[in-house]
Length: 324
Ligand SMILES: [Zn+2]
Ligand SMILES: [Zn+2]
Image (cartoon, rainbow, N blue to C red; front, side):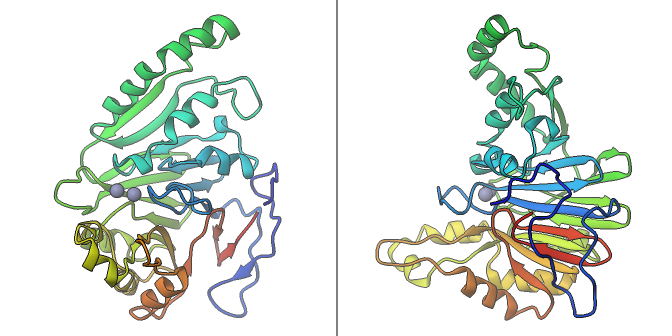
């Protein structure tokens, strides 16, 4: 893994995923969006797929969408300190999307170079987020009190700066970067649940969050440069021994449906993340290659199977690298 200190420097060979004849993009192109998949996993504690987290960099802003298990490790692998995260956005309140938040918040406040945040952590999310952050402030109050006394750290920086929203619309605008939240359908009882669209300098990235096949998402994603979408693929045999898996499948978008979403939204590139690939005793999981093949059965455009630390530059061309 590369540990470059410069966020905009490449350590890998770029290749264009769209078509022949397009040059590899300038890595320092300030007018491009850079998206890095920090975690492409689920609640499954998989060593190669950390919890859901997607970093979007636009000029000097670093926006983090969900903070799953290990997000801080991935940021550190990129040479990005926790204080450099400009804003956090939470899609919904399933724990796999949140368990890394206390880690980011608290180690970001510590004196080593990976920390040193001097102000509250700015975070956006659906109504109900403040209940969670307040609970975290309470859960870690003893640690915070000890460190304020013992290490002289700033109490005011050990806080969250929370903005909640409860409907679709632009929720963040700063220096030409706009973030739009849009409701998705993660299941009747799993509310609120949102996806996000980031727009900057004529470029756009859509992050599905956790959702079933969703028409609202398709409308928002139409014409976007990049669509990062979740996916589920559960072996048929598993339904026979564990019918409850049908409920899990119903909360997500099957690979074939993701192909249909990409076909309707027509992004310049589709990327798969949040792989719900549940297995059982003697029943192996569906492979990522098979997932990609199923997506392609409904979609003939550009698509890649995301993996942790995959970086996508969205500029004049859309380019993918496994490391940076
Ligand atoms: Zn999830
Ligand atoms: Zn979920």
